[in-house]
Image 1: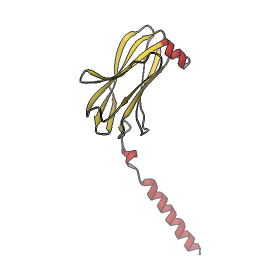
Image 2 (image 1 turned 90 degrees about the horizontal axis):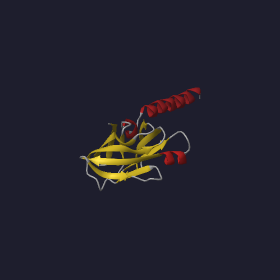
Image 3 (image 1 turned 180 degrees about the vertical axis):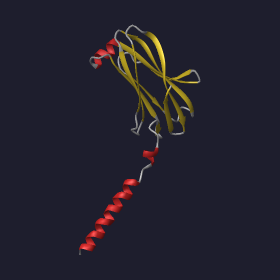
Image 4 (image 1 turned 45 degrees about the vertical axis):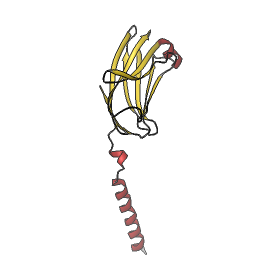
Length: 156
């Protein structure tokens, strides 16, 4: 009977070892690659050290996506954080650049641009800052290479 239990225990341990050695395709995908048939979204939010309301009152940032030097998408809300949704059926494969425009700020501001799938959760984030008193300063932050439903994101 002891031999029977030892064999079962040995088989269970072997199964655990084999399963822990397996990896899924998602684990093998680089951290900067998003696969999503429904597209991606780009969110821009920021902080000036206080509340969300303080950030929105103190600073106005805008978000732009360019292809070939031309704006193809933008978000220029004056009273909220920015979001762009990128529909794969409307935009061709190729290289896109993501820029953040500091319209104005009365405080130092730290911002975060997050690229994520519409249905897939695999966020890629970029963080940077602007200083108080800067105006109309645009920074190219990211490039996104679209190939079908695959988006490769890199810092510029």
